[in-house]
Every structure is written in structure tokens, then in C-alpha cells.
Length: 442
Image (tube, rainbow, N blue to C red; front, side):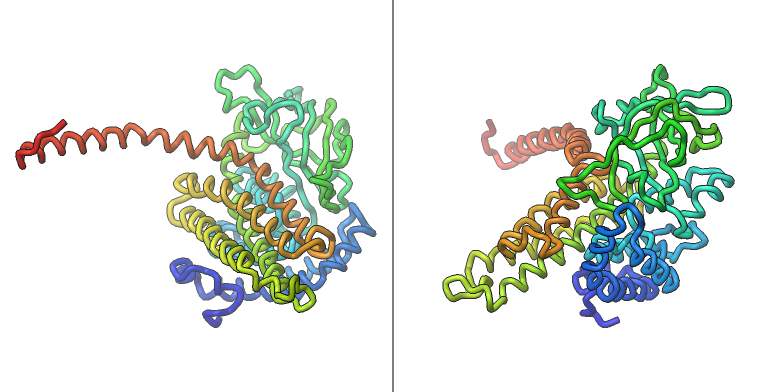
């Protein structure tokens, strides 16, 4: 692959040097797939979604078959999977950026949320029978799944508040409560939900009160009250919903890992997924930036007889966005590389850094690109309004950025005593040097 190939020409050399030859080949294939099969087909996909709504569009089904045949399916799978393409988190992050250039491109490769996180969860924590029944259809692309955690009646950002009840009764669990988000039950390919609920409310340890279970979408007592829109978008055919569990019963064999293990599972699920989100955001932000550049040289748009790109203020805006985009990529690639080399736990700060910075910076840059594009930038004429909405949504998804800032700030404050001690040592050394040189000290 040429060093200036579009798929990799923005990668810093320190990270590009860590990519295997096989990874570079895969990254190029993903780039060609997105550029030739996905972005040009966006108007067709939009028309089919409008027609089929909650049923998977024929175009998506066809593209998924083609991607699978081309070896572009399940690229995110860790090396522990037999079906894994063998990519590191860093290498897959490079693929995820390219997928982000088209909102639904990742889905064609079975690399979309929440599927990636759910597949990794089921693979790491389910028993053999559960994997055969629930995981394998997802890996094959024959079914899809949803993740159900957020609730309307509690502050879900503190997940110890999750109140949906999972009560054991004989050989079953009885579920009661309400949930928000989770893919629409009307989606024809959706098979089940992974639900987090409270199974032991009186446990003195709040981190052991909750469990995760698998809920088939046709479970009696489980229903969707209504579809939810995200800032006006229904995101069909997957969508979002408000759900009610009223004495919904599932077999005890549907519990994942065991009672009281939900937080252990949740933390294992979220790390790489947050990196995937952030890299896709960078991909869509790069594409918005390209549209702003195109508008800068559009001969039909010349206020006061000058190209938009000839105004000094716009030249500076273009420069600032470029700098910020490159900084965003450095942050996320660093997080991916940290997880590869030191593990998810060691990468906690880098993951939080990505989750805090990238959605906010992406919304800012896309907003600026829409502004430069003019009135059409706010309409269906471009993908930018949907891209901005997605970036804004990710500030809430997988935990609000305020919660991650709190974590980072709390960890930083733990170092305050160290710096206080260091400054006291400076003063002590100052006294010693003052005596040595016969200089009076205060």
C-alpha cells in the first residue's frame, strides 16, 4: 500500500508502524468497500428505509452478504475467536474510522453497535449452551440483539440505581420495570435483549445487587410502549424504544455468568466499544470537513465576488478544524494502543479521555462545517445533520461524559498529595541551597 493511500495517510507514523501487513490490506479493503459500496448508495438506503421502515432494507441484506463473502464480516472480533481476522484494537480502530464515513457502513460488516459489545459480552461470559443458542446467530449475521440498561425513573448514570426487578421464582426469573433505549422490538431481525436489572436489592454491597439476563423479544409480559426519536430521528430500522416488563418470565438458564455479576460484565463490555464509537465519529467528522472544503472552492458560492475559502476567517476555521481532527485521532489511537499493550484496566484513563473529548469535539467541528456549507448544510441535502445528532447522542451513550469527567477528576485529585510533598521538598532544598550560598531565605 502506498504511504499516501487515503485509508492511512492521516495515521501518525508511530501508530502506522505498528500495523501488520495483513491489517494494512484489511484497512484498504474496508476503505474501498465504504467508498464504493456504501457512500454512493446512501440515497438508495434512505429510500428503502422509508419504504420498509422497521424491516431490514433489501440493500442492507445484500450488502451484508457481499461483505461476508469478501471477508469483511466481524472485523472487531478479538484474537480469542476462531473466526477472528486477527486485528489488534489499534488496527480495528483504523477500520472503524473508515466505517464511520457512512452511518450504516459498520452494519454491513456486522461491526455496528450494540452488536459488537453484545457479541464480546456473550463470548466472554456465557456458557457453551448459551453461546450456541444466542451468540452463534449473531456471529453468522442471522439475527441481531439489543442492550437494555437505561431506565426513565432513576438516574441511570449511577448504574447502582438500576431498579428493574429480576426476581427468582422456581425455575424462572420474573421481570418487572421500565427501560429506555434498546433497539425497536418491531425490527424483523431482532432476536433478544440483554437486560440489566436488580436481582438482590438488599445485598449490603451495591455492586453485587444486579444481574444480566437474556430476554427473547417475544417473551410474554414484555412490550414496547412506544418508539423513541433522537432529536427527531427514529433511526429505523433498528431504532429505540420505551419498554415495559410486567411479570415477564424467562428461564433461569438465561442468566449470564450468575446472579450479582452485572457490574463485572458491564465493565468488560464497554472499553473497546467506546473506542469503536469514537473512531467512527472521527470518520464522519472527516467527511463533514471534506464537504466544508468543497464548499470553499464552489464557484457558484462567491459572496462579494470571492470564494468562501478566500476569506481569512474561513481559512483560519479550516486550519483549526484540521488541527482538532488530528488531535482527536491521536487521543483515540493512544487509547487503542494502550489497551493492546497494557490491557483495558490500564487504559481506563485513555478510554475516558476519548469518551469525553471526541463526541464534544466532533459536534463542534460538524456544526462549524454545516455553518460553512450554508443553508443546505442544515437540510437532508447532506448527511451532516444526522452526523451531528449521532455525535451529540454519543455524549450520553455508554454513560454521560460528565460521569467520565468525574472519574478522571477524582483520579487526578488522588495525586494532589504527591505534588504537595514535592513542593515541600522544593522549599526544603531551597533552604539548603540558600545556606550553601549565604543567601538569606524567607
